[in-house]
Structure formats: structure tokens, C-alpha cells
Amino acid sequence: MSKRITIIIITSLFFIIGGWYVCFQSGLFGKFKIKEPIKVGILHSLTGTMAISEKAVVDSTLFAIKEINRQGGVLGRKIEPVVVDGKSDLKTFAIEAERLIVVEKVSVVFGCWTSASRKTVKPIFERYKHLLFYPVQYEGLEQSPNIVYTGATPNQQIVPAVEWSFEHLGRKFFLVGSDYIYPRVANTIIKDKIAALDGEVAGEEYLLLGSKDVEGIVQKIVETKPDIILNTINGDSNTAFFKELRNTGITSDIIPTMSFSISENELRDIGTSNMVGDYACWNYFQSIKTDENENFVSAFKERYGKDRAVSDPMEAAYLGVYLWALAVEHANTDNVHDVRESLRKQSIVAPEGVVHFCFTNNHVLKHSRIGRVKEDGQFEILWTSKDIIRPMPYLAYRTKKEWNQLVRKLYDGWGESWAAGGE
Image (cartoon, one colour):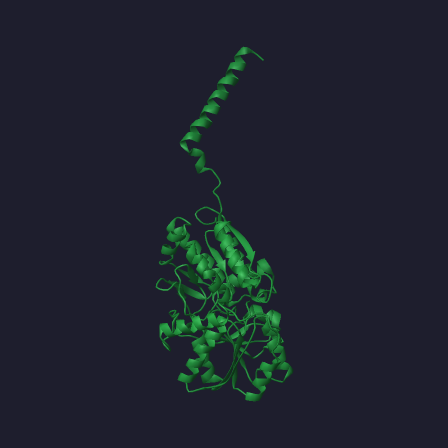
């Protein structure tokens, strides 16, 4: 190699290295650097009695994240989900919620189904000033600046269901539920409403979460002969309950059931044949005939299989991810405080319809719907509220102080837990 060529190579290397150094010092490379992903937590029961409902909600949450990532992510950053198993156990929910916040350092958590699990993790999110998106209808009597409630409040589900049932199915009600905070409070609201309608409560019974000991409850239903059963049982106890109803000859045309926690997804496990003709009240059904919903259902089935169904909590979880993403984009940061402020201005067109965030109490405005189970596992929508319903966590049947005293009494009675016998 000649001396001249050697000099040319050395000079070229000098300019190349110098150029790299200038770019590095000026931060020019930062413009081309791959941005760090935004970590988000997903906290649901993948095992235990509540897995029948919560595993599908995980799927819809991940589905929304995949869609957003395909569109470029949020603020040019991919969303990285961290999925953990609450194991249908309150202590596990608390441990995993804190780990997601402290160790995994997620920007938000999407999770919980039962109110017992939500109330267990609520102090953790408030202590760390973090943010939880909760996707399930619930009993109300709560509002936290650290929780976004994308499911229904009682006036968006429970109250319309009782009114419709009284008008169309009868005036004598039998109340059955799992023994934890949601069914206990829900049935108190239901009894207040029945009294206001001058109806009758034929009976009220509870069983532990996960219990299959339903024979005694069904026998009391046989003895009292109600016009309708109002069902707030959660989890796989529903399978045993409806099987026992049918074994004793109680079908939907003899004594129909209105359920508050059974959707298209649970029907797949309970068995549609056991529930044809029974009713449910939700804000969303898969059978809603809109372009937005049909596109959502079609895309979900393409991803997870044509035999899969979509339910209200799944849709509420899905819209919750998009609501959070919009707030992050608007705030130009995933900082929890800024995102919470940004949420105040958000509304989206979701599969269930237009959803507005209610900044006064961190809930959303929704329509209420009544559906009847069909043989294909879908719901025939019989009634939809004329107007969108504003969320009311505290109903006027009692004062806020009286409602809070009721909640405290239940908590103390269960040994400072949100469920009888733990969860």
C-alpha cells in the first residue's frame, strides 16, 4: 500500500470519527434512537374461581395494546404489557399490585374483576398516587382519583334491570349472590328499589366465592316460588347454580333469572343450553348492530378464534386502554399525574357507542341494555335506555354517610376483609 493511500485512509477515518463525535455531542443520534417502551400492568385472575371471567378480559386488554402498537404505539413508543396472575386471591392481588408499581415501574395498571379485589388494591394505588383502570360493573359507593371506572355504576345497570324486571317479569323477587362486597351492597340497592316499587322479596341467600354448595339455595327458591331470580353470583359457582336449577325443573319459562355478572363469555363455560331464555343487564352486548362494534368483534375473532365471544367487561377493558392512550397522547407524557388531568377532556367512539369520561367522579357515561339468552350463546337485545346515563356512585335511597356505614359494617364483619372467608 502506497504512502498516499495510507494518508487518504487515515484522513477519511479522522473525518468519520470526528463526524460521529459531533453528532453524539449535539444529540443528533437521539433523534434516531429507538424509544423505550411504556410498561403497563395487567392484573387479573388467570387461575382460581374468577379465571372463568378474567382470562378473557386479559385477552381484550392485550388485543387493544396490539392494535395501538400496530398503529405506532403511544408517543412513538410501543406499549409493553406486564401480565400477572391475581389467582382469585385478595392477598395476591395486593402483592402483585404493589410489585407492578414499585418493581416493574409500570405507567398504569389495567385490572381486577371483583369489588373485593379492587377495594383491596385501592389503598395501594392511592398510597403511590398511581392509576388503575377497572373494567367491571360494580356496587358503587366509591370514587377514587386513582381509579378509572369504565364499568357500570348501579344506576347504569342494577336499577334499570330491577325496573324492567318488575314491569315485564313479575313483582316477587328472590335474591342470590356470592358472599362479598358487591352482591351484598347490590342486593341492598335492589331491596331499596323493590320497596319503592311496592314489590316483594321472597328470599335472599349467599354462598362463598367458588362454592358449589347450591342445593339449599335452590330448594328455597322452589319453596318460595318467586316470579324472578336476581343473580349476583360471580365466578364458576354460576355453573353449579344453573345446573341445579335445571335439575330441579326450574327453567327460564318457569322462573326466569336476571343476572348481573354473566355475559357471553361466561355462557361458554356455564353452557348456553342451561341458560336459554334467561336475562342479563349490561351496557354492552356482542350483538349490538353498529359498524364500530362489528369491526371490533370481527377483528377480535380473527385474532383469538371464531368460537370466541366478546362481553361487556372485555369491551370496557378494551375501551379503557384506548382512553388511557388518548390521555397520554394529549398530555404528551405517560406521567400518572398529567395523564389523570388529561383524562378530564377525553371521549371516544367505542364498540358500545360514544363514551364520555365523567371528570367529577372518574366514571363514564353509558347506555343500559337488557338482553335475553339465545341458543347461539348471544343475547337478543330487548331494551336500551333512551338516553346515555350519567354515573351515580351514590344513590339517593340513603345518605352517603349511611352507605359508608353499611360498607364499613360488612368489612368489619368479615374480619377486615372485603369477602366472607377471604377470596
